[in-house]
Length: 320
Image (cartoon, rainbow, N blue to C red; front, side):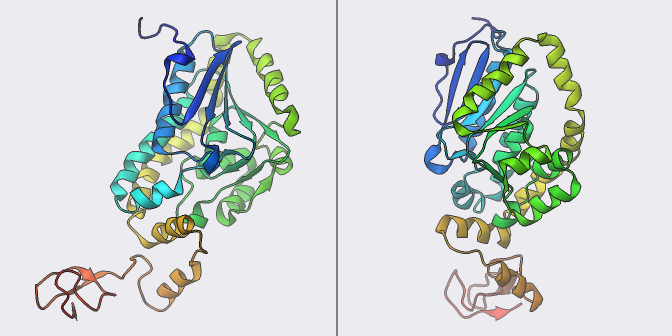
C-alpha cells in the first residue's frame, strides 16, 4: 500500500471518535457523549488523522463532522483535563494548543466541503470546530455559546478570530464577553449556521446539502474552498501563534486555576473575589500572592507572600 492509496475506515483504530465512509461521504463523530462530547488532546489527534484520510480519499466528496448522541455536538476542551494537567504544567498547554490548531487546520485544509451536523449543545471550542467547517446544519434545540471569560481562558482558538467574520463585530463581542447562549434560530439569523431543522430531519437535511455538493466538480470545489478561506486564514495566522504562547503563560496564573477548578468541583466561580484582591491592593495574579517571602531558618526564598510558615521547614516566615 502506498502512502496515498485508499484505506477503509475500519483500518483505523480510534478511541474517542467514530469514523465512517461510504456513498461519497466521510462521517467523523466525536464519541464522548457521557461528557457532552468535550475533547481531549487524544480526541483532537484522532480528528486530525481522520480528516487527513478523508482529504486524501478520492472516494470521499464531502465530510460531515458531528457529535455522538442527541445532547451535544461538542462542548469544547475537557476542563477536567485542563484542571488536572495544564494548571500544573502550563508549558504543556502550549503543546496542547498546537494539537488543537492542527485539528482546525485539518478541517480548513481538507480540500473538500465539511458540514457541521449540529445535533446539540455547541460550546467553547465546539463552536470553533463549527466555524472551521464550511457549512452548518443545526437541529432546532441547539444552543451556541462561547465560554472563555467564564472559565478563566480566552476563546482565541478561532472564536476571537472568526466570530466577527460570521456574525459581525458587536454580536461577536457580546457572545465572547458575556458567554450567553444563542438559539439555533438566532444563529441562523446571524449567519452562524446555514439551516435549522427539527431534530428528526437533521440527517436528511445534511444529506440533501451533501448531495448538492457531490454533484459539483471536485477540483473547482477544492479551489473555491481555498479562496473563500482567505479572510479566516488571514485572521488565524496573524493571531494563533501569539494566542498559543499567551494562553500557555496565562495557565500559570490565578484566573484559569479558579476557573477550571471551580468547574471541576461543580461550585460557583469566585469572580468578585479576584476583583477584590486587585482593588484592595493584593495579588490577583497569584493564588497565594507573589513570591516575596524568605525563610530565616532554612534560607528558602521566593515563597508566596500569603504564607505565614515555610512550606519547606515549617518555620515562621519574614517578609522580603
